[in-house]
Image (cartoon, rainbow, N blue to C red; front, side, top):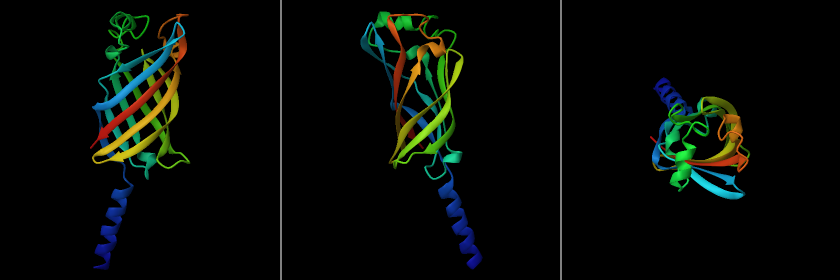
Length: 179
């Protein structure tokens, strides 16, 4: 009987330390960005977010986030600008249909519920390592992950040598992941 209790305790402990698998839900998730254009802030967004999150705050070494979004869904609430952003000088959506992020490591922050993620962001076939902080808030059937980071659009060949548009932009993520 004692052996049986030890086996049950081991199984329960192992399950508690394993990361759980969640599916990213586009409904409820937001990917937005802000960039200066002619000195004024321009807000934009993407939809069609998909991916898989394997996450357990107590088992970060086995936690991963892999996500992609349709580049053709870029939306700045200006049809003419959006059409232009889909062309080869910007996102080249006919050739590069998705923007992807694949995590390489997740670590804990000194603040409860906050973490750091390291990974590879690919835009227009160009992959760059990025890192940023994020929060992970549990809800009834998964997590809500929120974070933001800054990138240089020129690092990804977006927008060419445009002088009207700032080089750096801020990306904001609010991701709903459900099991």
